[in-house]
Each structure stands twice: as C-alpha cells, then as structure tokens.
Length: 80
Image (tube, rainbow, N blue to C red; front, side, top):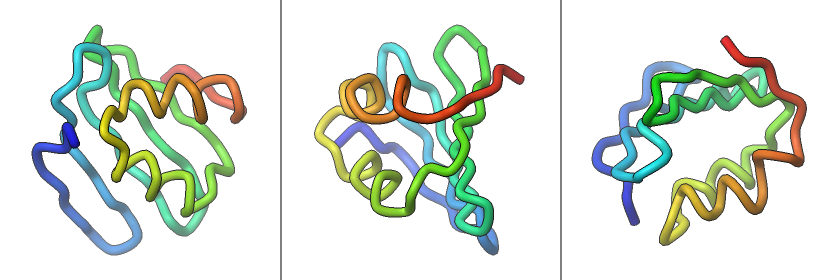
C-alpha cells in the first residue's frame, strides 16, 4: 500500500498517498464526496462514491491504479 498517513476528523477521513500521480485523498462519509489532490496540484471532487469503494481504494496495492480503473470515469466530478 502507498498510504503514508491516515487521519480521521469527524466524518472526514484523509490519507496522504505515496504515488506518482496522487498526492492525497479525503472522503466525507456523510455526503459520499471523495476529494483527490493530484501530484500536479489539481484538486477534483468525486460525488456519490460509496464507502465500500473508498475502503477498497485505501486498501489497494496501488491507489493510482485503483483510482484510474474504478473511480476516475465512474463518478461525476468537479475540478476545484
């Protein structure tokens, strides 16, 4: 796993990722919003991401590969 740190604050779970493409992610378990910060500095919010998908993302051997295969084009998103 490439997760460096994990922090839980209320309904927000934040992780720092050691990846060539992803820098960090945070998940709001109340509104199911996944916020991804890319290594380039871009930030995107992905909406209605189920808890199970975020859990699999966190536990994946490669968060970048899991993100590309299961989240990037599967959920509506907005660049911040």
